[in-house]
Length: 171
Image (cartoon, rainbow, N blue to C red; front, side, top):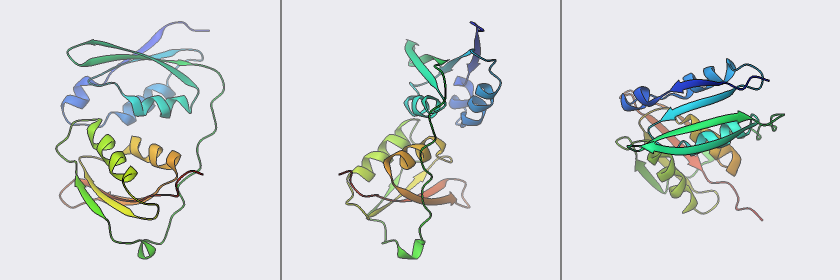
């Protein structure tokens, strides 16, 4: 078993307003069996804990100063099954959004956090629209895990607009 870490510093990507998810997943794909990923980020990447947790990684995080974080993702064994995909729903069956959030000027993870808080305030079946600075890859996993449906895409201005329909409350 390999004991070394593969180092990935996504702080420059985040500071330039980019989305490091593809670089992170590429690094995960390049790991040798048993090798860990040492990730450096400008925030504690909580959504990534679930994404990589579903792929069989445990996470150990520590703040390293200046708001930066070091997270070591270590393989824990067999990957857990992926949560079921959101079922596409006919958008014409959806009610108009109850509210629209403009999260374009927020730093990660605030756009996702604010959007999830907005969804929690809805009744089952209601919808919320959110404007986001980039495609919300981490948000998709959270929505799927919570049983919500969504549709979205890039607007001509370059931001991402998503409409989310709250699923049924857990019994």
